[in-house]
Image (cartoon, rainbow, N blue to C red; front, side):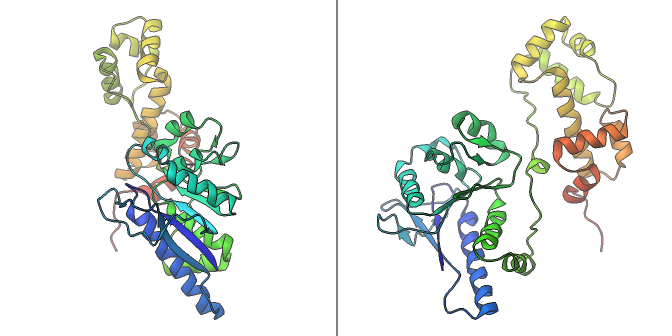
Length: 327
């Protein structure tokens, strides 16, 4: 039997704790049914510090089964999804110290989304590969430069530490742990019983680019608005500089300083975002979308789109289309 400590953290996402509790419980039920074992395969326990009332980000109280104790250890420990400022996690020395002790006792430490900040704060990820939610990746990279961040990955197993990416990746993590500590057949059975898609490997299809418009410069903002209105047209640096009323060198320097990207890099981001939106919300063909997003060569667009998102345009539409098919 594997004891699983599901960590309760202030502002956690409730389902990332209780959802894993349910997943491990169903896994044990199914394993017992298949093998007629005398004890459950997994024993999930919600664990947290004493004398602290834990509430999820939506103010739901999180019931703690066990308080941190020096003489209690787990085989698997999972830090959950956490909302809000991740800096707050780094101030929780009690939880960080407990995680270090659990690792020393032999536990496999795991995290989902911002939970990776707690694992990284222990120092146990230094020199190892890890992932976190794509929207937190830049902050994580700045704060933990000794961790080899693979922001595009949905899940990374480094043996004694396993990190999972976005919010719903707790399901990916749970299935992976059931496969690793149970069996592939058991995990496969659960995907069918619970209707969980087991095929997610990358976060890049879900990632959106943040197009900075809050810099306060009216000339650069005017160029950004003009780009959106003329995205389907051929656009050069000279065109953009002319819209800003600046020389090309001055424009490029100021744009990079305010936006954090070159004008051409920004234009490419904008075009890919335009294509994504059109694939999600229209029935236009890939060829039509190629030209609507400002690209002239369909083959080149397909290659660039897949490089940026990890999916072909057709596969992206199949996964993310907002249009509901009639039955």
